[in-house]
Length: 145
Image (cartoon, rainbow, N blue to C red; front, side, top):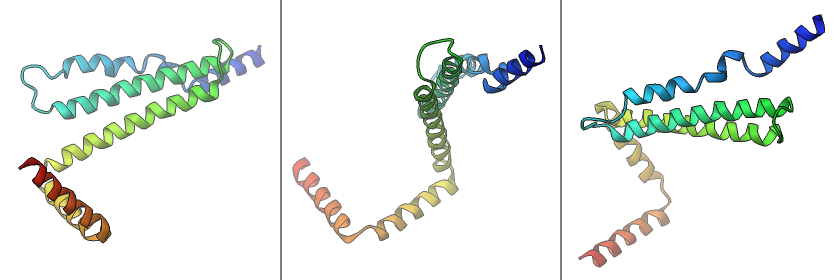
């Protein structure tokens, strides 16, 4: 019985703690209260937050499927499923980073930092890219006018 208890403990530890089985449901329920109703001003920020929450949910669900595959409870190879879970986590991280940057550029200090960063990037652009940009702007003005 000691070996059975150890195998059970190892299986639960491999599942990254048993309490995670419904971990993704809470954030999805919380989205209902934060829906952009009644003229929400920050629709882009809300959309990025929703993408992050949905990606988090799918990362957890995919990771659970990987665990079930690893223990041969459902068919399929666990490695590709694990990679899919990591892609969902990457999407979540990218969405949260975009949300933070969006909030940052809306502050006075953030606008100032953005202006300085754009100016520094323009100075460091190769001359050929700057010329192409000017040419394309001239073409747009000629075509639009």
